[in-house]
Length: 593
Image (cartoon, rainbow, N blue to C red):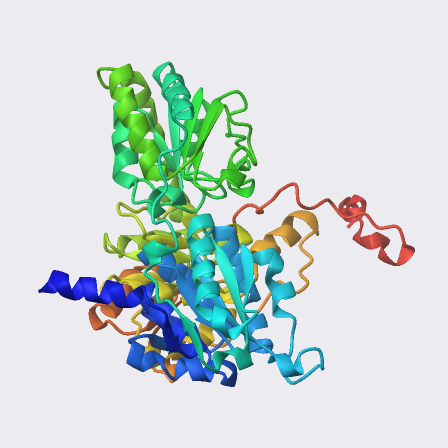
């Protein structure tokens, strides 16, 4: 009976049906299993919005459209299902630029439903008119435009197909008058218009990779987001164990290899793990799985130029554009991270009939990890006024449950967290990544919580970034999203302040900020709130917040003089001045003070 019913439904779906464009769009969202759409209500898409409750789609309203993009980005990273956002034409859509650009850099499948000015008014500088396609061309994989009402569903299917296939955001632009009228089209299931999986890659490339790994003396793995997206963490672990290859996490993807595994050496990149960097420095073959090896994510750190210059690199990426883009590769494999890793593992078992053992190397790796873990603690235990930011991070990590999801922002303390955040499960670390925009972590945490309602979710945010996102506490309270925001308050844009310390003789322009008592603000919005200036108060506050399962804000005052190294030591030069008016600011004059 069930089979018969399914066959009838399938037959119905193969027939064109009369519907409105709004209905065609919503039914396509239903087929894509979209449960939530993020944005702010607007008249441009109200006809479509009116169908959401009946269709079983929840519209989750935010306080600023940028937050909608970050929420949808994080929801996708946790759930694996493309995020969907929508806003009013003109300012509502342009408010999403930053978060869509961030999703583009993060390779997060995202569909931006972009109502634009109606066709009768286009080009007349009408109310809320903007050329949205031009605005988004450089920060999306594709801008898909509805040119006729009859193509509404087909164009949306194209948007989802590209978003999943090429991993990133797609703009679905539809003039606001095209939600109305009558059309005929099919309602198709996703498998009818897009492929769900990609294979393991070219067979010859796999063979070359196996040959390199078979003969490697110091193989090392870098595991990235592609591993997580493909569900390949367990496969990469098997591969690492068979090769006795230490495994590092790609920059800000600390959930791409379990931190408690003996072969785990931690994350590379800014403020990452010295154990990972020293280990990678010695590699003769690097197996980079599901990572583009981003330029920023492989820069020297702690004065360690760790990325090996002479190692043979095997790079696996689902996107052919990323192969060899930042580092020359010996073998490039275009394929699914899990499928390619599984194929390499299977062939290695034939090429190397028994697992490789290198006890001496493993002892060296274990010692480096031990030394680095102790260094993290030692740096954290140095006194701070009122709290050393590293100590605050250390205390916070003590309170994190094993299944906690943590989003991290951009900034001095948030980036220092790279060394302290350790995960044993995938889809736990949601970072701002290389677009580097502040204000990411809190809305991202809200999206992550919606994707996994029962998980404990935390946001690591500096006070500067918090000023850009604290308005969403209202959203968290209204929608009952129990995220715990850990705000590290040093009353400064501290990453930029560090540049003024190192390059501008401690002349602070624009970097010192003094906000309100964030605990009071959060309390006024209806959230749990804690003002903390003692490290021993951090764990109890987190435990209480987790117990109550309500939105919570911890305003943690940390020392504004204990700053991490600059993001890029090569990004600034010592100041030189030519006009007499400014010569006293020349670095050559510093010694004359």
